[in-house]
Image 1: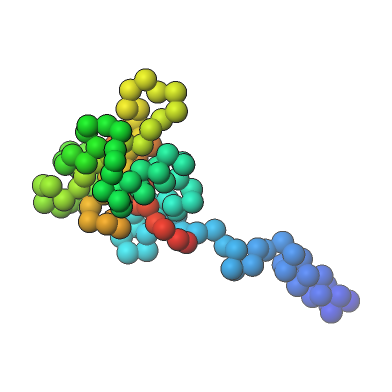
Image 2: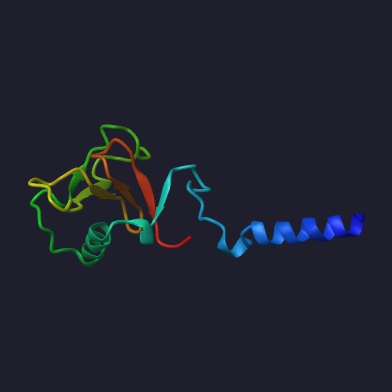
Length: 126
């Protein structure tokens, strides 16, 4: 009877628990605990802007590429001029919308969906 229970328990654990290889990616950076978003999780418009940032443009808005001053003090503190901000188009918005990407030296970039209230570090892979 104990062997039957043990076999049932092992079978249950194997079928109910996802394999480690398919575990969800970390939601926070292991180095500093900063929230993370994977490149694949970003909206298409954000991935498009990241490509433009890497290529040096072109950008749709005059304010794209200006110094981001980090007034909110959410991003790690750096000297003035370290961060640059870029607009992520918001479908249906009449203005620049609330979505932004802020980058230090590449590949250090952060995504904000709520006009700098919160940020997530963009990570290329899990």
